Image (tube, rainbow, N blue to C red; front, side, top):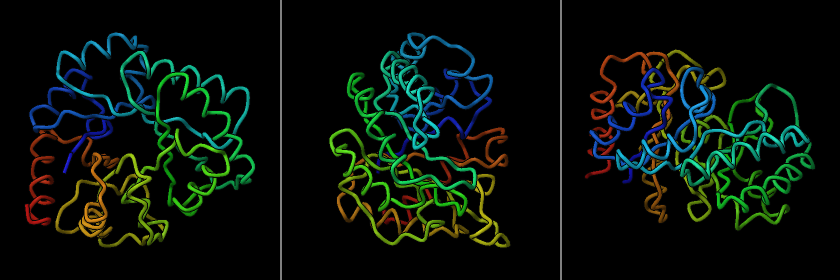
Length: 265
């Protein structure tokens, strides 16, 4: 497995600290975020500085996470997409993660397709892949990978777009289909709270994967690997419990060891 880290794991770390932690775990791929106040990119860090820090640490930036809400297309969305895509290109990122509106409002399929059509030339111009991530929450406007793939096909975007398979959202969305050949990235996180119902699971419940996981992460990972997926598995826990850890590297190592041993590695 290729493990990667999403900066949401340790939002209080600087990029340099986050990159150093990644390398200490034997990993070299990361996702950086544009939605964390006080951290690059939101703090105005120039993309060239991000590129330099990554190169110095021997880090590959997989994605900027995220373009939101990509399925509500407008002149403002086009402007924000262009700005983020140019930043991604300049900092050396390979892709943009793209998330749908997640506010309990339905979005017509025509708007989803229009967003994909509008974003495609911006990504192509900047040499980026669009990683479309369905959100399985009951209040999400695009919950499944099947819906995303259908819209990508209608938009003629098969060469530009791939899917994010998020183990949390796969479980919440009630999906059973896997699309390894169309998947560009896998997000992994667990839910170990025994009390919360699946319907009520939120980002705040997402922790590192351990033996108490309720999402079937190990089964999902095995299925993806057996079907030929060879891309990265990026840790993306949102829980404050994880984000406030004094030693996140140790906790990550424990989770990596648990996953590896569960896979028989």
